[in-house]
Image (cartoon, rainbow, N blue to C red; front, side, top):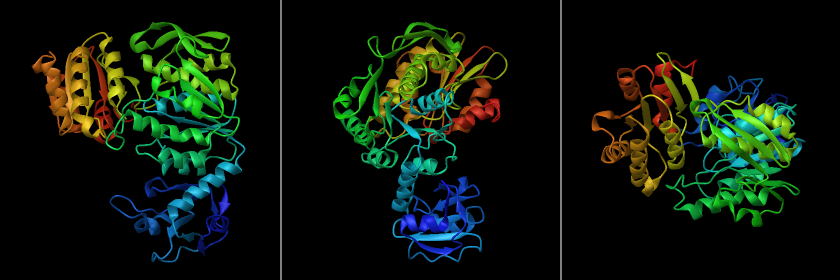
Amino acid sequence: MRMTAAEVSRATGGRLAGSPGVVITGATVDSRRLRPGDLFVALPGERRDGHEFVAGALSVAAAALVRLGVELPPPPADRALIAVDDPLAAFHRLATAERERRSWRIAGITGSVGKTTTKEFLAHLLAARWVCGASAGNRNSTLGLPAELLSQPENVEVFVAEMGMSRAGELDVLGRIVRPDVVLYTRLAPTHTEFLKDMDAIIEAKAELLQHLRPGGVLVLNADDPAQERFSSAAAGRVVRYGRPDAAVRAERLEDLGLGGTRFDLVIGEARHPVTLQPPGAHQVENLVAAAAAAWVLGVDPGAIATEAGELRAAPRRGRLLHIGDGIELVDDSYNASPLAVGRMLELLRRAPGRRVAVLGEMYELGERATGAHAEAGRQAAASCDLLIAVGHRDARTLAASAREAGLDPAAVYHADDAEAAATLLKRVLRTGDVVLVKGSRGVGLDRAVDALVGEEAA
């Protein structure tokens, strides 16, 4: 984005106060993320209204997008206020216009698990050929992704957009803005069931994106996921499948190297190349194959994909392997958790050598499924680890009790109310040669427990 305040005012139909010529080069709805040149979009939040932060934001931001009728002090001489009827709608119009202004191609990634890692893998593969931009972290919402679109450098040629949702209608909003050239689905699973009552509702919500695939675009589907079978008939574009033995892109002759990753043949169309993928776990192979399929349809040579795949690492907090001294290895998957993702990581832990320690935080947004999902996680933990620390205030107790009932030694099952207590426990019970898995929903904050063990810089 590179617009003057006057141009933003015209594009949004807003009323301008302050400097019309100040240049705006990005946008955010979070005053804590502001950079010089940004447009601060003032929106009401759960606890505070963004308009409360406008004066402070303008010490950094170039301009603020605010609601008409809200009384605010005049902006500084070299700043601007742009007042509109609906700041969120204006924000989305700006992002839509920015997408249309750019000549870039966009790959949109959605699904229930693996979105962020697949996005990071795909961005790495595309960067071998083009200047590639990507949404940062998990900035995949109706607030985060438009801000990412508006904040990309001018030289970006292709953009990878992670597109998330927790409620019906959100992918429709994002699809209207992004209008991707490629839509990639990672595996679908029961997540956000506090807001989406069952798997059919999840599939229906995920399908909202299909209508926004650009003419001539490509739909990339997980052939191993039966939930995606109906998508191919709903999309107007070409369909490419990945995963199973008859898919166009797949992994064959897999050799599990444990925490050292996986060795396999990557098959893309008629090409076959050996790959050693460093991030451990079969789910990481699935993420890589998904990213390879999207990179291929966008024009990256299969040989280049295979070469770059060997350089991939897990994203921070997304299954990254850390060595923390005394021969202890820690798998930091602390960013988020769902029942399927927890099961995948426990399977990885089950195959690890040495004493296996699982630090499992509660899984959020499961609604009525929460008790059953945590009980199942406890049973899986009992089959996968030698020592368990369940972290949280309510469902963690269900998880711990289920692990004991499933046969895990009660003396090896601990409960911690929060991440700090979990870190204290870990420091007391860890010993040389342990392998530690840390996983939980973002709100549990288990990244703090990881940092307490290895230091923020190492994590």
